[in-house]
Image (cartoon, rainbow, N blue to C red):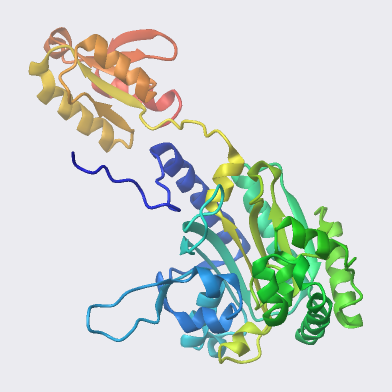
Amino acid sequence: MRKLYSSIRGTCDFSPLQASSFYSITHRTREIFRIFGYQEIILPLLEEAGVFIRGVGKNTDIVEKQLFGVARRQGEAKSDVVLRPEGTAQVVRYYLQNSLYKQSSFHKFFYIGPMFRGERPQKGRLRQFHHIGAEAIGSDSIYLDAELISLALHILDEVGVAKKELRINTLGCSSDKEKFSKELQKIFASKKGKLCQDCQKRAALNPLRILDCKQAQCRKLIESLHLGEARVCAQCKRQFHDLLSLLSALNIQYIYEPYLVRGLDYYTHSVFEITSKELGSQDALGAGGRYNSLIKELGGPDVAAAGFALGIERILLALGELKHPETIRAFIAVADSTLMPDALAILQKIRAKGISSEMDYCDRSLKAQLRYAQKLGARFVVIVGQEEAKDNCVTLKDMEESFQEKLSLDQAIAKIHNRGGN
């Protein structure tokens, strides 16, 4: 017996219904980005590993555990090429490679596409997934932070995600982060035995990552620290409070979350997550924040920037049961197989008018064709029989109103148009 193949674990197929929803989400999102003044860029799936090792951080889970290396041809040197795990560092690479800072002091980009991580697959966590991302480079203004947060929430509103929460925190400046990291090293050094295996390693190398751990034993220890804003300098604290006031003025509700750090090293100042209880344990629809040091870290000028990414698969999960869109407007049914040439000519003429239409290719009976048209969700059936062919007309059946009449083909097309579009 031949093997039946399945999709690779941690990847998923999109059914026609899911693909339609995917297209609807991305189409609406592109229109929103246009309104907000963001320009689309399309970047390769392959990048040098160093872009992420230097950008994301060598002691992050993405770099330590989740990079997918790409094998080269036999006999070639070991590959340092990887499938991209996230978009921000890649956009910065594009920005620097093309010296965009010499062309303009401010840029706003967006991207939509697949990302790859060697995750442990579970609901809402895949090895191949799709991001909607935005990056704004060249400003340290809290008004830009507010725009990005507002933009991310607006996209989710527009695609139909009603139940969500915004969680926000400040990491302070690079100096604040460094001091806080050293403080956490001291705290966790004496509590290593209470941490999970991963966090025991993080305690010395990257203690801030412990705050992002979801293991129950680590959460209990983290929450006992009673973190607040005392770890950030007065200027960063003031800047964060100004941002919160700005969000309130925009009627954006938020939850202050002092344990929120995100899993990427490049973040400084404001960080945020948008979560949904509909998703279970992997509850983040998207996240973002400010990364003022990343461009300099990757060899560029000292330029401030901020951005976010939303997960399309997570959005689809939050939307729940998807509605079947109308894919076929009209169905051409033949009463006699000898009339197939006539039906094909009619089908071509209807499609030329921009009307989605279909016909039977399986030699079904007229009754079976009507059932099939109903299954496809067709509002109209154009029936072609010997009598219609003789009288140079068609019978137009309205499936929704259970009404039919004989018309010329042009009259039938006009009625299909007039009763609800294409």
